[in-house]
Length: 225
Ligand code: SAH
Ligand code: MG
Image (cartoon, rainbow, N blue to C red; front, top):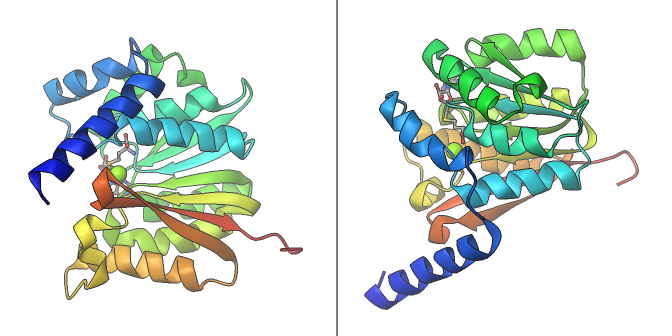
C-alpha cells in the first residue's frame, strides 16, 4: 500500500468517526479498562459496533445471540439497540472474560438485557437450542475461527426464517482466498463457502479495515423467498 493511500484511508476513517461516533462515556473507556484487566484487544472497532447496533434495529430483533463475548464491548452496542423487553444471549468460554463483561455491561446500563453463558460454545449451543428452539432474530459470530463452520450450522438451527447471521473476521488479510493448512484460515474460508452455497441463505461479505478484514452478512431465507 502506498503512503498516499494509507493517509487517505486514515483520513476517511477519522471523517466517519467524527461524524457518526460521538464520544461515549462508557464505550470509550472499554479499551483502557480491558487492557488494564489483561484482556486481548480484539473487540470490534467502534464503527463495526455501530453497524451491529443498526442491524439489530433494522431486523427489529428482540432476541440476539452472540458467540464470543470477550469483555462485552460488541454486546453493549447490540444490547443498547434492543427494546426494553429484548434479550441478548452471549456465549463465552473464559470465566475471566465473562466476569469482566458482566461488570462492563452493568456500567453500560444493559446488564438486565444480557445473559452470558460460560462454557465452550459447542457445548452451550445444544443447551440453548433445547431451551429456546429457533427463536433468535440475529446471531453475531465472533469466537474461534476453527469452529466457524459449526457455528454456522448451529445458527441455522437457532435463527428464525427472515433472521440475520453476521460473522466477523472472515477475510483475515486475504488469507481466506488461499487458506492452505492453517486451521484458522480454513475455518473462515469454509464458513464463507458454506454461507455462499447454502440454499437457506442469501449472503455477502462487507470488507472493512481498508479491505484487510470483512464481515459476512447472511439472511435466512423465508419459504416465500
Ligand atoms: N465479540 C467481542 C470479541 C470476541 S473475541 C467484541 O467484539 O467485543 C473472541 C472471544 O471468543 C474471546 O473472549 C474468547 O475467549 C472466546 N472464545 C474462543 N473460543 C471459544 C469457544 N470455543 N467457545 C466460547 N467462546 C470462545
Ligand atoms: Mg472480531
